[in-house]
Amino acid sequence: MPSRISEAVDLHQNKYLDLNSMKELPESYAWTQLEHESSSSISSRKKESVPIIDLRHPDAVALVGRACITWGVFQVINHGIPKGLDQRIEGQVNSLFSLPMQRKLRAARSPDGISGYGVARISCFFQKLMWSEGFTIVGSPLEHARQLWPHGYTEFCDIIGEYDKEMKRLAGRIMWLILGSLGISEKEIRWVGSNRDFAEACAALQLNSYPPCPDPTRAMGLAAHTDSTIFTILHQSNTSGLEVLRGSSGWVAVPPVPRALVINVGDLLQILSNGLYQSVLHRALVNGKHHRLSVAYLYGPPKGAQISPLPKLISPACPPIYRSVTWAEYLQEKAKHFNKALSSVRICASIKGLQDAHDKIIQVDPRMNDIDGPFETKVILP
Ligand SMILES: C=C1C[C@]23C[C@@]1(O)CC[C@H]2[C@@]12CCC[C@@](C)(C(=O)O1)[C@H]2[C@@H]3C(=O)O
Ligand SMILES: O=C(O)CCC(=O)C(=O)O
Ligand SMILES: [Fe+2]
Image 1 (tube, rainbow, N blue to C red):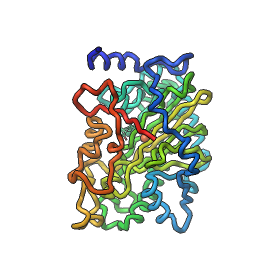
Image 2: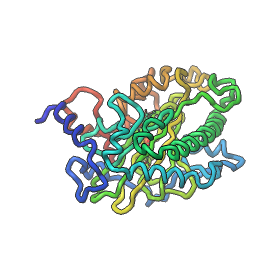
Image 3: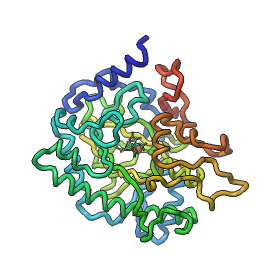
Image 4: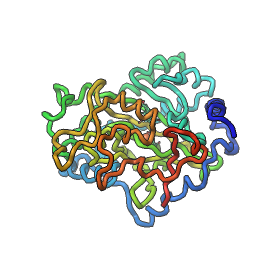
């Protein structure tokens, strides 16, 4: 039986395989059938689909509230992001991931860093590797862009800057819809900012690439996870792959809708809403023919802001179930406990009717069985 350390080294050595040139699925990327089962067949039979909300609808607040409670995810249209920006950002993402591996590695994320090129951060919690590459941007992408395109990095930086600005504006608007749906006014949030635009809010941009895969039914693009955000705004290219877990219905596909953006409830919104809006477990599957891209805007509170259940949502009958955390503290919990991060900040162990995403874990990765600690693979039965 190999030791945990040598397995970790194996993973590390496999880390930068060039997925774009592989003709067969290496064993290290082959996930078990069980992990793929329970997929969309059930949901498509039931004809359930993730709500699509027109942000210009007069009842947008109520629609958003209902979608947060019943799904934890929705798509938005008429969101005001300039036409064509989605295609321009996709062009940049495509050009980044099409670079030769040696070039991409110049912008590699350092082991303890946040920004840069690399495999999914959550890879260390899984036995198998994921069929994807990522590039994370926090703050300015300039230094990494220079490494990637020494003679032509400005276009990338300009488009990222424009996308970031537009996302921040949209995120502020969605914040108001969500807060409105919870009955929260501006007086009740310290960090709304003087222009009511959440100017100090922090965010990360995650660019994801899922190359065509020689054996897509055995591969996993991005394993099931929840985001450690208030919410995430996701643009997906015109190839399906995103799935969300919906209670007893199992995995439901979130099909790309032209110009629509997907909004995922994140863990911090679950904390703020005292468990009313639960973060959504989601994953990305891969495709045999098409290269899939996605751009996630991971939206969170300002640095140092304490996130805890909103006082208005608390009463003797509904005591706070989470302690207060900053985003940075929560990300540390996530890095340590992954699926169990929410329960690690829970102060009230069991509330009837409330389940954290991790409570749905029903089978521990057998390789991890004899290891103490939080290493668990989500295997969700139908
Ligand atoms: C702010 C962040 C959220 C994130 C970790 C990060 O520091 C930057 C990347 C984010 C991301 C994107 C892909 C899925 C995810 C779980 C991951 O591994 O990296 C999220 C992280 C998260 O939400 O916890
Ligand atoms: O590619 C996708 O559809 C999902 C990406 C995602 O979940 C993430 O970046 O957090
Ligand atoms: Fe995600």
